[in-house]
Image 1 (cartoon, helix red, strand yellow):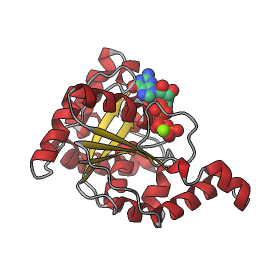
Image 2 (cartoon, helix red, strand yellow):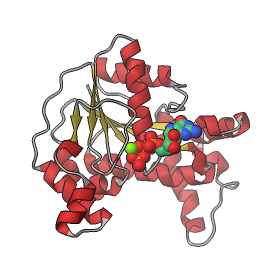
Image 3 (cartoon, helix red, strand yellow):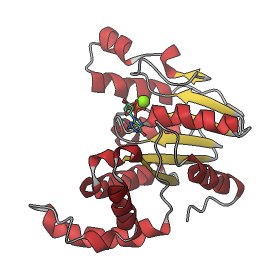
Amino acid sequence: MNVMILGPAGCGKSSLTGHFGSYLQRHGDTVRFLNLDPGCIELPYRCDFDIRDLFTVERIMREERLGPGGAMTRAMELLSRTKIPKNEADFVLIDTPGQLEVFAFHKSGPKIVNQFVNLVGLFILDASIGIADIPATYLYSLATGYRLGIDTINVINKVDLLEKRDIEELERYLRNPAALKDELRTKGVMSDIYAPLSELMQKIIPSQRNPSISAKRGTGFDELYDMLREVRCACGDLT
Ligand SMILES: Nc1nc2c(ncn2[C@@H]2O[C@H](COP(=O)(O)OP(=O)(O)OP(=O)(O)O)[C@@H](O)[C@H]2O)c(=O)[nH]1
Ligand SMILES: [Mg+2]
C-alpha cells in the first residue's frame, strides 16, 4: 500500500518516514522510500525514488529567478507532469514537502496524489505546539484530506516532549473535544466560533483513533502499524 506522510513544516514527516520504515522492515515487510521534497538536503533514509534527481528548489530558484515558495510550486507542477515509477512493496512510504499548502491548495497537489492507487494519508500533528492549537491543526488535516480526496489517519507526534499529565490531557481532549471548550476558549473573533467548532469536532474526532507517537524515539509505532494493516486488509475504515 502507498502511505503519504503529510503535515506542516517541521512536524516530523521525514523522521517518521525513516524510523517507521526501519520498524516495518524489522517486522519483515518490504518497504520503498519515496522523497517528494525537492527542498531538503539530508534525509534519514535511503530513497528508492528521489525528486531531487529531477529538480531541486535551489536549482529552480537560480535558473528561473524565483523565491523559495515559487520554486517549490514550480517543482510540484513539474512533478505533476512526471510519471513517478511504480514501486511494488508491502509499504511505499511517500515523504512530502513541509510546504503542505502546495499539495493542499495548488492545482498540482491532487494531480500528484492521483498517481498513487491504494493510498492512505498520515497527517502528523505536532504535539509540541500545545493542546490549545491542536484544533487548528486538526482542521488543517481535514482540509487537506478533503482537498486531496484521501482517507487520512491523524498521528500525534513528538509526545516525548510532553509531560505525562499533558499527554493525558491531550488524549482526553481528543476523546471529547467539547469538554475543554471553556478551558480552551480563544480570544477575539475565534471566541465566537470556537464553541460551534468544538461541537463539530466532537462529532468527527472520537470516531477516529489517533496514534500518539514519537517518530524520534520510535514509540507508539505498534498502534500505527495495526491501523495501517487494518486499512490494507479491510475496507479503509479508520474507526
Ligand atoms: N522531540 C522530538 N523531535 C522530533 C520528533 N520527530 C521529529 N523531531 C524533530 O523535529 C525536527 C524536524 O523533523 P523532520 O523529520 O525533518 O520534520 P519534517 O516534517 O520532515 O520537516 P520539513 O520536511 O522541513 O517540513 C527535527 O529536529 C527532528 O529531530 C519527535 O518525535 N520528537
Ligand atoms: Mg522533511
